[in-house]
Length: 167
Image (cartoon, rainbow, N blue to C red; front, side):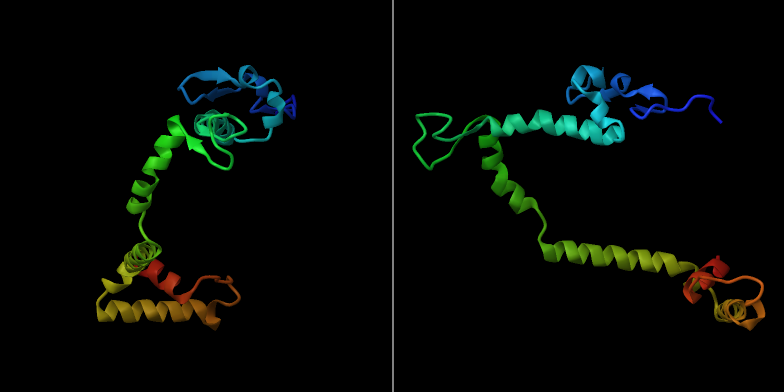
């Protein structure tokens, strides 16, 4: 047991302000240099902290390119003008939408993966010959029968037991 307790605002004994995070530019920097109050991230995972930093860095790239009449007097009332990264994203939106699979395609791919996973899961049973299959079925019946009810409570399905025995 450790002699000292870990402070609330630290991870693995490292002070939260000293915890190094990866910035979007690829630089490792202590969290205390990125935020004035690094203690707000005391109970967060490193991945979530880095994700927050990346979102904070990327958001202005897009939102700064959205001009309205409140921001720029050259833009007519009620209209929006896109510049920079926002304009680039808007121009690529149709390309992204065309490349995105439809709901039906996603469902078909998911169903195919599930069918393949099921076939792979029961493969040990399908590779058995008739005699071996009968032996496995008999052993499953015996395990789930009254012979073993006092020895151990088995909380597995017939199929799971059969696959394990077939292996």
